Amino acid sequence: MQNIRVEPGSASVRMVQLKERHGELERRLAELERHLSLTPEEQVERIRLKKEKLRTKDELTRLSAIRAP
Image 1 (tube, one colour):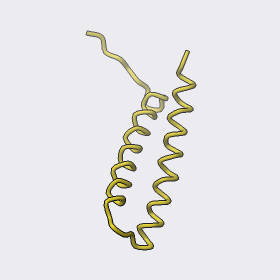
Image 2 (tube, rainbow, N blue to C red):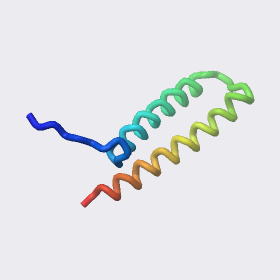
Image 3 (cartoon, one colour):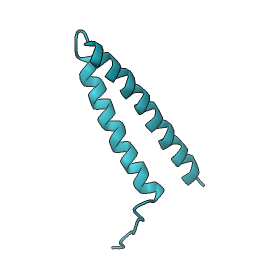
Image 4 (cartoon, rainbow, N blue to C red):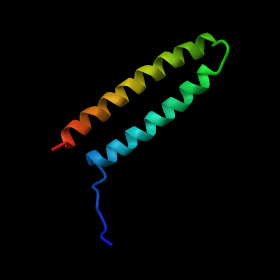
C-alpha cells in the first residue's frame, strides 16, 4: 500500500475544506428553510449563508478546472 503525501496548502486540501464548509452551509440553510417564518436576523443570516455557499461553490469549480488535465 502506498502512502500519498499532500502538502497542507495544496489545492487538494483546500478543496476538502471547501467541500466540508459547503456541506455545513447547506445543513444550516436547510434548517432555516424548515422554519415557518424567519426573524429579521435569520433572514439576514440566510442571505449571508447563500452568498457564502455560492462563493464556496465557485472556488471549488475554479480549483477543479485548474486541476483538470
